[in-house]
Image (cartoon, rainbow, N blue to C red; front, side, top):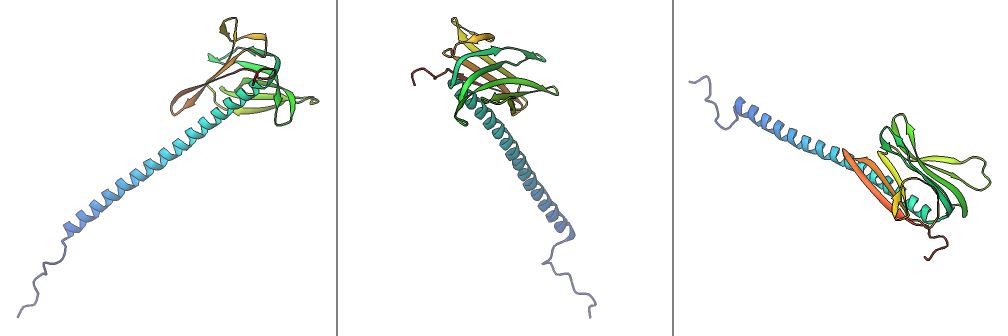
Length: 190
């Protein structure tokens, strides 16, 4: 008579179970790593696209307002920490309020970072309103085509002169340069 039955060969050994658990752990780690990488890429892409959208919207707004300017305008050029920082001021038609208003775009220094600011004043307003349109701008240049060349400083430009706006912004670890050219359409052929 036997006291012990022989072991059934149908089960797994301890070594086989440990190898299976290790293999499942490696596969799950790889899947989690891939998922985490995709999530970070998606977040970074969303932030970059939002920044690009804001910059393009700002450039489009400036172009439309320059196309609606009336009379002379002024362009000035400055440097902030070796970075280009132009400004432009003019009187233009504002479709939002249905009147002509004074408008100025310029770069302001906010703690070592440059921001693009818009200043506008409606008729009858004692004090102009200001708004930061775009933060952390690397360079902002306004040039006027006059006398057969592009100039960065002009005291009294005529509203028929083409204006070129160039903005350089940080984008995905590098810099992106956006350019718009506009010319007043008030009093001209549409």
